[in-house]
Length: 229
Image (cartoon, rainbow, N blue to C red; front, side):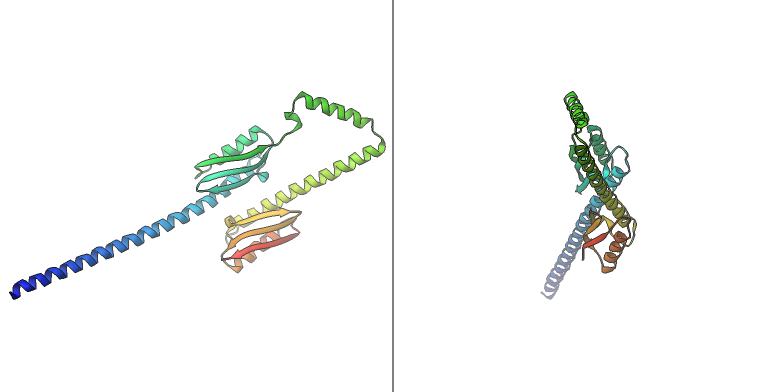
């Protein structure tokens, strides 16, 4: 009787040990799966940021594309291009550069072709000639006003180009500085005033980003919209 009771107790003990081992193994596997999933999610986010930077760099470097006017956004490997282009050829080249970038799964084009005199045909040419003839018949006062308007338009165009150049220079500095997470900082410029938006890991990183922007050529002022995590 005592022998049978010992066997039963031993069997129960073995069962409890086996159940505990299985439970521990299951918990360990679940923890590993969660860690792997979190690591994969982080990798996707970083890949999107890197893709955006790579595509933007290609657009800026290509002489056939007005990269400064094209915005690039990436989500889960899908790149969206937005902005104006001068021709179908420029549009196709921008899409080709994006598709040819490592990590890109798909390219969504929201590029719009700007209308120019060259695309409107002979009717536009005739209208231009007519306007030119009428302009030649105007008085000196009218000519002076037209000259002033042309000059103002040229100045405005120059300001737009200057803002775009400043944005590109500041962004390049942020990406090149190892102390700053340039991929997470957005740069916008208007009338030579630079606005920095995004998240940084520390006050030191924030100050370094502001310093780089302030020391860029043409920058009059820097607006800080950076937040420290």
